[in-house]
Length: 252
Length: 114
Image (cartoon, rainbow over all chains, first blue to last red; front, top):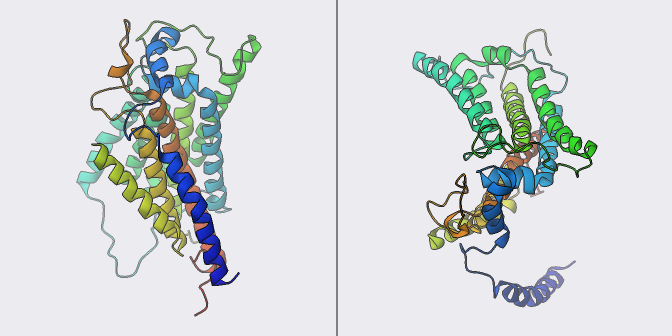
């Protein structure tokens, strides 16, 4: 197609698209203003219906729980793709030496960094578990808690170095955590079918508002998502950092 | 507040769209990231721009929806952030693999002939 023909086509399309776009923008509510009544209904009825106080967790794991299942599968397939493409047939045996870049000095790790990471690592892990377990009560949940747990394992890498990190955080554990997380979500949705309810319907005892074991299915799904997110994020980090290592002598 | 946030979203979206049309695959990935930030912020802003309105309800009693944040956009953005992190990692790996195969990081697989 010649340049003139493309320009003619472009302006012809513009002639249709611009008025339609302006027509669509007229009548929109102004930016930053509230439009949805859906959210208001969830806010007003959520605590009574499901005995949880965090409405975001209620929407993610109950009202729109099925969407989160799809989201879990997207995360799972993306992590699987990363692992398959990067792990290859190299296996887990990688040396402690990072790839040398000319003219860049290699500094040793300062004791302050190691000390701080040793203090912060367990506390970050504990905080991640706390955020996950209180997902239905306070801001937080599986997604946030899982990311914090993954960050806690990265602190081992920061403080102790790559070999120690690989020794503690095994790839097989991460694969297991990722698969178990998605599996828990899937099976927790299937179990209500046995009782004659619909998929992912919250039929478990709801417990008392404000207690750790409230919300029925929501804490279980939270834990599943936390496992999947922590395993997924951590294996992505491990696979990428493996690329920065010199191969061992016995490897090609 | 509205002006600042909408300007920020506009800048993010414009930079993302510009980077998407660059010839290097890394720039395309960064452009996708910026676009997803813009969309996330835009969806997030749909839930009312106020300060000090959490989506956490009291244990019992009447709830006035005006005093609390809309949880729907927050829940949508929450999952979108996790998905975009994982897919960006996948894009990066595919980019590395493509560069290994073709020896070039041009989106067409080879540099344009001069």
